[in-house]
Image (cartoon, rainbow, N blue to C red; front, side, top):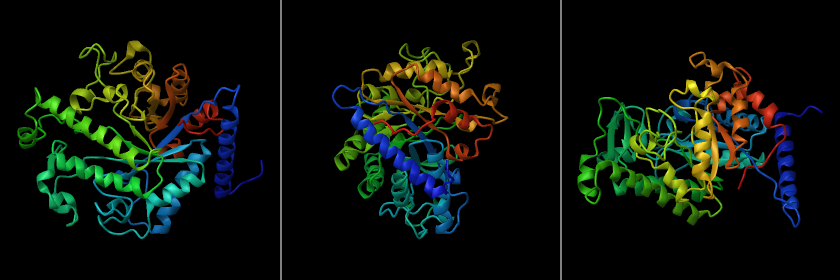
Length: 414
């Protein structure tokens, strides 16, 4: 094969994907079964400059170059979707009228970086045949508890009654109807402005439990929780409302834009609920994050779910606290017959990390995950955390996935 520049490679790959799309259409005609599609995504995290930009304060040209490099890496790995974090901490990576520019860009919250990262990401991803899923965090405000460190115009400073400090961080209170309205308006601004392929949320709803601390929503519960048997039921209803309302709003603005959620991998343990998984996880999304992720699938409120199944497929007798080979079939049963697409979140970041158990030191571990998941027709693909590891590939685990499973480009499922 002749040598291609990075841009040339991306253009060639995009052309190949366009050809695949035409082939899909032809193969789906009379007498032909539709061609299977496969989600091959990567998360591109911006919170605390995790993946991008490499540090705050780079020039607009440097930031753009780094962003394009991540997209080209995705193409080179035969991925087809990038899940780009554009609202990491109640801020924005686009010119939002609701919230300040994110400090991850310039180092100063509210400072205009001189370009539009989300608009650029959408255009450049589509040019390369990649889907662009815009990843938002609904309630997280800051990774500290000092309101005075936020820019003066920040909505949290204008409405301190909306804010709950907890576990060393600041959160919007999900129990306030005005908060749910505001955070949806802030996110939907991006849906109106850009041709994004999906709105994506991760696992942060009510915060993860912190020992010895209480999430203080007493006043909101007293004002709005009277019709519920207990506070946990009220909190779950608050999260349900957010999901249901956002789903309807996204479809009302862009009917073809999907709405997907990537929760923590355990809904409930079977010891807690017979409908739960055979796991022993210390966190259960239903009980601890007040997120009934199973219900959202069964009620078809969302288009896809991508549970973060961040455990190895080690032998079951070593199952502490969970196991990939237990959770993938469990989620497959949840998704069966719902029409909701099931993707599996993969812990690429653990591969080769010396702090992780022995299974994660094997470059073939993630490839085995995809082989196992392929036995379950409800699984429509995988998303890898995260972009930095997709590129660096510490022990060759991603290269092994590509060699074993991604030898040719493929379109994302729809």
